[in-house]
Image (tube, rainbow, N blue to C red; front, side, top):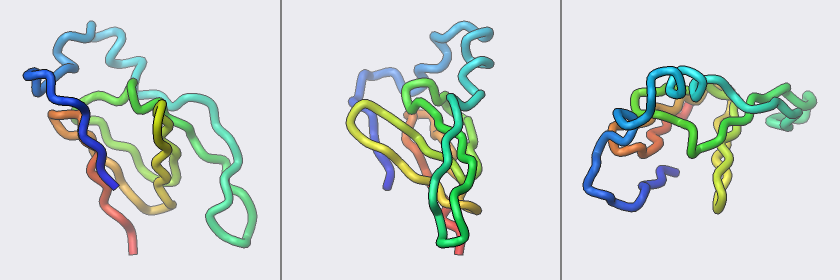
Length: 93
């Protein structure tokens, strides 16, 4: 599922974020165990959607939290954030 932020007329919001802050945004929030199979939980990084920046890539497994939704990346999936801050997900087979 891909979400689109409300249009603000600025297609690249990351340019307004200081470089030092953009670098810190690339790290995940805390981790937690998530069940992807009956084999048991996987220690999974948790990202804050509001902190993702244009061009950022996130490899699954991962959880993307936001105020109104949660996106699950299964192992092998890959998320890319486009210039409009949409999340584009390549689902593994």
